[in-house]
Amino acid sequence: SVSPQLKGVLAGWKKLLKITPNIYVTTISDIEANLDKFTGPHRAVGSAALGNEYGSVRKMADGEYYIAFTDGMSMSRMLETLAHELGHMHMRETFENADVATQQAIRDEYDKWLKSNKGKSAREHIESMRARGVGKLEKISEKRKSEDLDPYWSKFKEWYADQVSRWATTSEKPLNVVERFFKRLADAMRSFYAKLRNQKYLPNETFKQYMDKVTANIDYVGPVRAPVKPMGKKDQMALFMDRLDPSDTEVLYMRRAADDFIVDQLDTTPKKGMEAMDSMIKETPSFQAVKEKLGTYVNDATINNADSLLAFLNMRQISEMAKKVLPQFAQYYRVITTMIDSREKQQTDAAKIYQRWEDWAVKHPALSQALDRVMMDARMSGIDPTDPLKEAKIKKESFRADWSKIKGTEGEKIFVEVRDFWKQQLDRKREILEKKIMV
Image: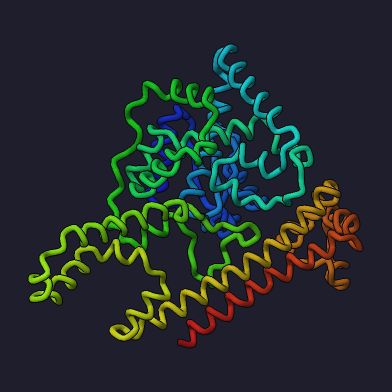
């Protein structure tokens, strides 16, 4: 499921970062579908399906690496995730072999960052660490403080990987790689991070200088652009936004993956529209000419500036205008609206469950880990421990022990909520498939 374009970006970044071992890249959904096919040193790849991360990296027994990531996110967030995982490799392959002075300089910047978060909120802590898009996916209570976060959020290796992710998605040389395969996305990212208000998402200045120095003598930044079918506007928009198909329950609804990158670009659209209107006014012919050829003039001006003028209209207004000429457009608008409403409801339900789960995990970290293991064991064995008859069939001792820890606690209620949420998604998907088959 990894596209040739995404492979091209990764190959270019790998070259740029001077990572020499082979890297195998796959998606979580592909791993889940092929768990029994990983053998030898690659058996370790199967473990990536056990977690709930957006991405993971691991060095295998043969010295090679694999990266597993969640597909279904926007392209910009997938790139941030992959760059983060490459950052872990870069730390291991390059940073740990750097001279003492370089290592100390980077660690000093990390110490400054860590101290700067004291007294801040958990949200501010995460936003100062993560790359922009992925950072917004973290559902954190506004009341939580930086000091309340899991130790994960203060580890040097995670800060380092996030700095690499920030560097890769905002700096010129790595964006040149992205441009070879996703030109409009690269252009949008350059424009976005050039704005003063968005510079808080850039990497630490010392870290950027370090990365620029590491990659200074690399001129070749990626393979020849993959031959692909030209992308239309709809496909280009998909680079910024997640899929709207409500039947796509493979998307991780437990964490919202709706990218608002496109929202930050909208401030340029009204300007373009105003310029078009201004041009039409300035180029207005004489009164007599307008009187004689008014219809032709308005028609030509509208066609020439259609893209800009449509920027002033929303989808509902366009639907009202188009339905007389193309009645199917009104039906299309209703379908899109229903799909968006459906997605929003699912994400809202998931967010409520996730927030409750997270708040409980903060108070009971040991029980939270037991709950994580119970969910995985239940999934792998097909045994629902809340059913007394099925609970008696549990053979795995660790499964039974973990279940006894959370049984009767808030953890059991969370287990039931998560189970029922995914059951609803599965039932819904089956219903949609049955309708498609019947048609």
